[in-house]
Image (cartoon, rainbow, N blue to C red; front, side, top):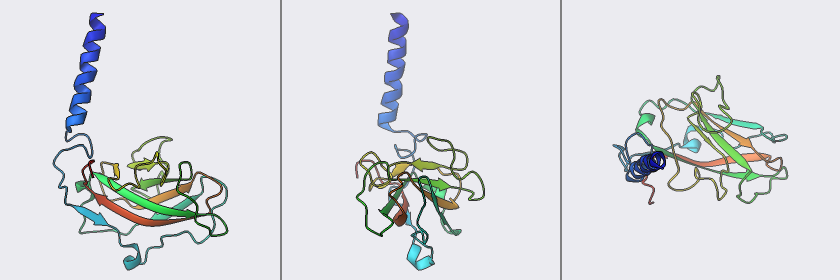
Length: 181
């Protein structure tokens, strides 16, 4: 019984630290400037935002290679918001729902672009399922938490549903918005 109480107190302490926020938890407090943000201007840079060839089957890749942004320190951001529309083979817009599209930020597009099955990996600092769905968070205004050690080299979109033939990214914003927004 005594062991149980000690474990329970330890878990409560960890939970309390998490709710208060600390620098080691991305987006949960720390020293990030809440006014700092950077939105990739795809149109202004001539970066394609939609795949030209229809995706075949499931887990087909649409990689967007990112240029270098010498004036942006990506390690200063604690969150990212990524939004996209997806379309069937006829070009019809599909409703936003879970299980349709996933997104992965990639440091080196010549390396392991998929990373581990779940969660981030050494070359994939962000992997989010359910882009646009109610169980996803990356598409929300507050975005998904992340901890970047360098600038991403690409963004990999994959169709988790065979009905998704085209993916069109509509926003990629790195920021430090508080969770309350």
